[in-house]
Image: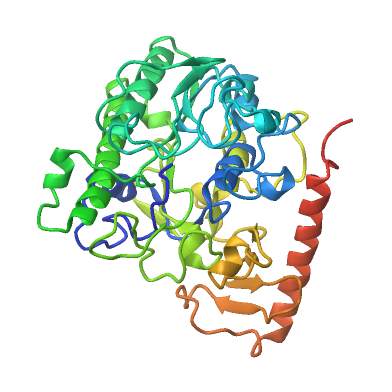
Length: 440
């Protein structure tokens, strides 16, 4: 998973000069999701959705730097450990604090936030190289916005091999984990969450030189994405070298849309392509992100799909591929098993994707003029202010991905039906958030 990489920030999605040859190769040999949605328009909630298959408003991670993974949730790592998997997390965690004693990141080691201590090793991961928050994308220990460490266990953190490209630093820990598992014949689950291209956006000299004709800000931004892309190539080559690529599911996505707009001077930039909106918005540009699955034994040739899919689908799809249920995992689950889609047995999603983000006065969505709830179906997308104070928006996303033509007055029955379904889903999330899903 990348951090703040927009839908348009890849070569295969049509960027005019950004170099992402390894992501392009993945998209050309695997399943490309043309409508892949992050679980939220900001980072922390999306990450939780990827591990649980549930919308983050069910367990209290409403936005970035809030909440933590609750003990009652079942993560994909915990589920896979019951099937003999070894599990590792590498990179940005952002789902709770990682230390009770040391001032770290935005919240770690502070008395008022100790309740949010929820590190990977208490969420089903055997191995970790994890940071609470963002890191500079070059020399990650230098000029940090929030002084942070890469934590490897309880009150233990890395002190070596922390210079240079941050994506390489992360992959240097993930690859040995994969090698040990493969050589020992043990199935593995590796979560690799890059910091690029989130700020502080810094590229090293070699990657800046690849964009020498661009402005300084562009050199850093595009350079750090290309550096990330190189590490994806390194990972793909490792799987092939170990002889395990054929039957390894390799997923790729971003956690939300781009932070900034394309300008020639700023490093905070990024492209949503033809989509409306950006990070923090429920318009397509804030939540539709690059999405790829490479799995040669099941996807023998290049394919693409316009069926809406999401990070909430990871959990049920992996369990579906392995043919087991996670006993005791809380319900309801928002994700769906994508195996029928992967096998070419369906071209529709069985139920829509619900999204919500912080609304109200001063809320993230409100600041961008975006509604705070959305329901995404196979054809139509409803954006709504559930407080009823402003008019809903209805778009036919199949022909209007830029969300320019509001059909709410032309198709009132469809809008009414979707709004009712959205309100019911919102109420369900509120019940979950109050603890109704946990076994007492």
